[in-house]
Image (tube, rainbow, N blue to C red):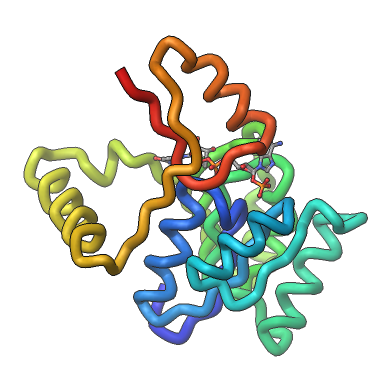
Length: 193
Ligand SMILES: NC(=O)c1ccc[n+]([C@@H]2O[C@H](COP(=O)([O-])OP(=O)(O)OC[C@H]3O[C@@H](n4cnc5c(N)ncnc54)[C@H](OP(=O)(O)O)[C@@H]3O)[C@@H](O)[C@H]2O)c1
């Protein structure tokens, strides 16, 4: 994304969502976030989201969400969608992009996205889809150190706030997973030993 771009962040109060929102705003972007509760809406706004959409309240996610995103972007759609929800949001994400927009599919909290007809990218406006994994962006020790330095520098300097929404003992890891799966968590879930 570039400064001035509108972007859409799904699960905006989640562990990745709260960080992504702050990073996008710091880069000069305007964030539209989706969340499923009022508490999560407040957190997303505190992280810098300009528009927050309760996607749990939409009757037809694939139709209603893109319409709301276009309404919030003067009809254009967003330059990028950051989608860690996956199966449930993929169609809405693709339909929310502006011409030549980028869908960054980084997770599948609701399930993995089934195979996609690539002609949809053509029809949607010469769209891009990428499916990144952290390991490929920290592939060498040097790259890992550079990214870690940049990240922790931002945290230390107060430019990036990390919310720890819940802490579990490692022995309770199953409970932590159950909480994540039930959409009950906000921010990061930390396991301690
Ligand atoms: N590619 C990578 O390298 C990478 C790195 C880190 C994480 N990830 C992936 O990114 C995603 C987000 O990770 P996270 O740790 O930050 O989790 P998270 O976003 O804090 O938790 C998942 C959130 O997804 C939303 N959600 C929507 N539909 C859901 C469903 N059917 N079941 C469960 N959750 C649902 C919920 O938020 P609402 O209640 O607001 O809908 C939930 O709180 C995960 O899929 C994770 O595997 C990928």
